[in-house]
Image (cartoon, rainbow, N blue to C red; front, top):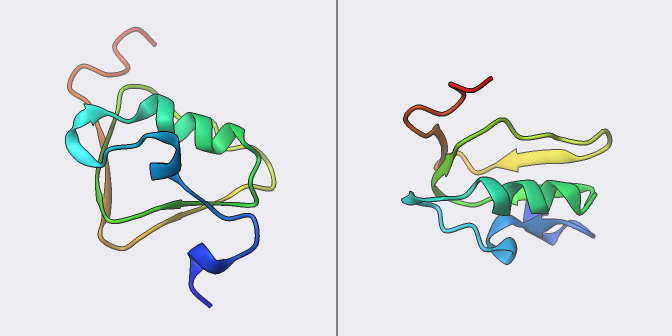
Length: 79
């Protein structure tokens, strides 16, 4: 069974994640994680985030081997 075939699995692209390495995907990834789906899938691509993501208890985050999550330049300076 492929991860996206699991009952309740959500793809971050359903929440607007671009995965193009340019767009800020922070909010899209966090919205997917906040859905409390049992599995959140990150497909191939480069996802730029500007702050830490909160993964809720009971949520499985599955990133495709060809997915990259990149911290944006200067992110986290205000922490």
